[in-house]
Length: 274
View 1 (cartoon, rainbow, N blue to C red):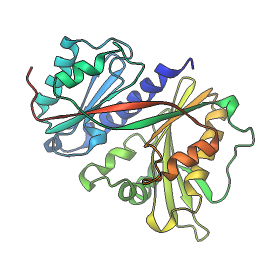
View 2: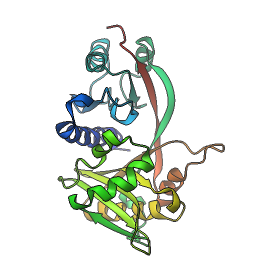
View 3: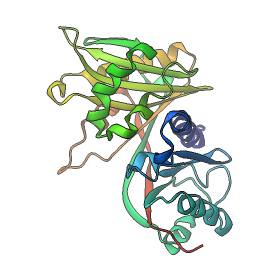
View 4: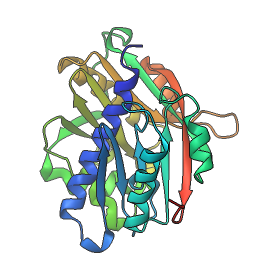
């Protein structure tokens, strides 16, 4: 899989852009900031205990992790006053025993996420917009998107604007699904970088779940990614377990996406010793 590293980089870039735009417009009291280590990205929002915006993505992929680099990462979060934050660790990150260093510096392993992907040639050529109605939106629809997706994702109101902060920017595509009465019931985003497309920031209103909205959004984004010249797509989700079924996982698999790898998560709490 020639784009395995790129899957980490495109997600890191997507979240760095979302958070940078949010940080530039949010109140200073939230302390939102972005730090980059090459193509890896760290997001911090010390006044919001939200995992998605207090974490590091793609560390160890471009540059091997060592004690000095991890000290710098830990120092970034400690200086910002973050109470806890996550470090995502790809099995393709370097060095191979890097997780030993994470544990030694206080990281506690948590439930992993799954990285799914597909080369466009493995997605059915018939992928096209289907009912229910999917519409690509612009900045004027930001409030509607927020009203639908933020509660579905459990995003607290003070940081909710961050999920639409890049709406209208190059490379970004946001979509809403409408029901037969033209009520918005679901939304999702796509970020295109070079030949890849990252799918994320998706949610459905509780009353409209299990009605095909997210399947329609996946199909529409795959259709648009092909049209825009992408050769691969990627998305994240959590495992599908017997006692914790995950419809998102099943939707992605039906589209033709496969599990590329399971990505570890390490939780750091408080100020770790430097």
